[in-house]
Image (cartoon, rainbow over all chains, first blue to last red; front, side, top):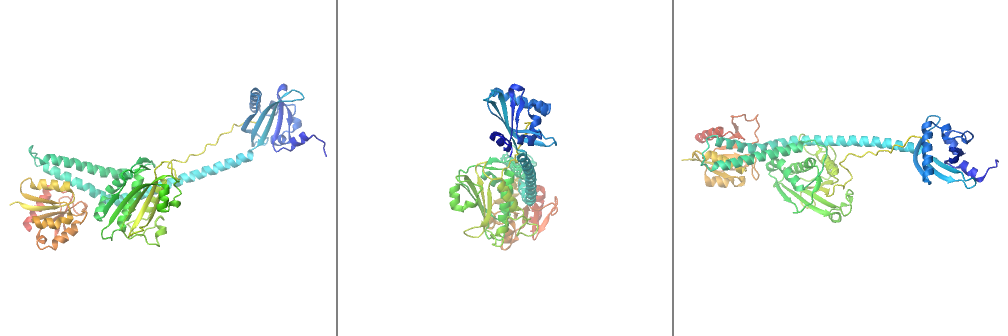
Length: 421
Length: 126
């Protein structure tokens, strides 16, 4: 057995590299342990008595010297979280280094003691993880884009379904305008009291036609999701205007029950209209055989505790205790949902409607849109009476909800400075 | 004596302007009913020579109202012109007139001189 001091033995068996330079002797190395040999692939016998310029590239040596001088100047420990040295085989070695200024008690020499930990494996794992994460982000982004495309495709389908009704609603003001033109073109008598009335009616007709056409254009627009604080009542009114024809034609009575003060919710108006149009049209279809079809639209605002009690909302994990939640319910008195279909209503392409009436995308897309708003959409049979109820729960705060509308923020890895130890 | 025309349409603005047009020359006396469920009652008290009937209305649609009229001994003889925004251009082209059973169907927006011509023809024929 070789006879060496305890300190030497400890130094040579440490899992970290340890070295020391003499600041009074041009920073020449006076200590170089086994791990330092391993990392640098330079033997202690070659290193001791030499300075950084003799062992490393000039660029690296300049860097080491500047750090050493800085350590001496500050007179205290300096941590270098990550530095990179190039091994003799050309691979990068990542080190976490601590440099300490000391005065040797026996000799009074000023030394720089360095301790380096090889973190190459950690860095490699981190880089792999970052690369995987980047791929995952890209896949997620692609999925989000596909979802938006699906939402838009479903919307175009609703527009097709609504178009005839909207045209009907525009033709009525047009009919009024034409009658006004016909009346006025027979000659205007300044004493005719009707003229003022007619002009007023014509102006209102233009405004009405404009409003519905604008509503349809806004609804059709394909924009990136953008939420704004908006009153649910405004959305409901817009939706009832776009579906007025379907509701009138099916003789559906609409009853709205909104509290006077309902906090605004953060919605993308056009996307949310899409959800409500789907729910209203579904209800109208479900009530096609009802004697007196009736659509009830109720809204209220609860704090989460109340919601829990009333709705058994523990499963609504998107909300936190104490959150204020706006609940919108749309009741119909139609056929309801058959128990065999209950678990499938949100499946894409699942439909109980005849070919050409529905594609089965409405509810699945609606649920996605509501989730994008940090909310929850459920559809079930009414607990009392015939028919179904669609329930939408929405946060009143913008930051609530698992799915953010913003683009995912990609982490920017801190670029470590490439140099030696 | 002025011919009596009853307008049944839930669009109050439209009926008001149509009434003004029809009454402008003193040729017609016009009554309006914007609630289709009261159409029969109003028709029986007004006793029109001709009825202009909308198709898509809340409560009762034009078809139901017409069926009600046809089963009434007095109203079944009154000519009905249906006005609707539902008709598309393939069904009725500009200036043309479609038939739906015993009724004439005109598209909305309606050209007033055409409506006037059809009204005259219908009253003469009855």
